[in-house]
Image (tube, rainbow, N blue to C red; front, side):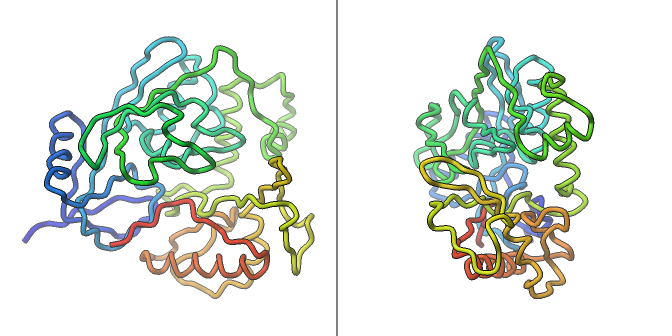
Length: 330
């Protein structure tokens, strides 16, 4: 009897696949190309930090583990898709390549980062991507996509269409860099520490961001979670509909063109008293945007809870929340 492969994931859902291919070399890329040529189905994952997996995965699971950081020049690097994201952020800070400081401690690998166009505290990774090396999963061609070809937008990219497997990412850093520190949580921590803007450096800002994240977001290895579960919705300001709350109860950012971005976590916080008790899943007590696995939850437990949240938000605010993590079905 063939032994099933357990697939590690940040939500700690007990998930298994018949076949796991970890790509660390060119010979293993050839193994993937054989799957493509044989028209076999497969699922590509990184570190499993942004996935909601089923108990059983019928496809082969392909996991890039390509680990290298190549410095092209003082402003450009090429990074293997298997490198841990925060490992890269720290490398860049140590080598005077600045811009990633606001993105420190986001779980996952470098290869997963472009897929969601990860972002935090006013910074998105797409700003620094020059090109992406990948394998076309339709025909097996190894190609390079330019930043423009990646079609980046808010938490979105061409890679969500599942046609490409990312093997490496080319990053470019500007010669001059302005720190982004206007977010309320950063300003509050600076005030608490008696710091002024002129006291900041990229390394100090990264330390502040790391402190904020650790105080607000649970460590997946201790409390299983995939980070922010919902996107902050962007709507026309005129379409904002409130039944039982005031505008001042919400977190609102003006994004221009008469549109606003709403803090999804705050909206969930406002309606969470209406949740039905669930023994397996809940929102994190310090940040309602995070769904946690309390008690060996299965995918169906998570999705049922997600549907409940979406339904309550729709009922209260006439807004349909979009999920951030990828839901993988059997």
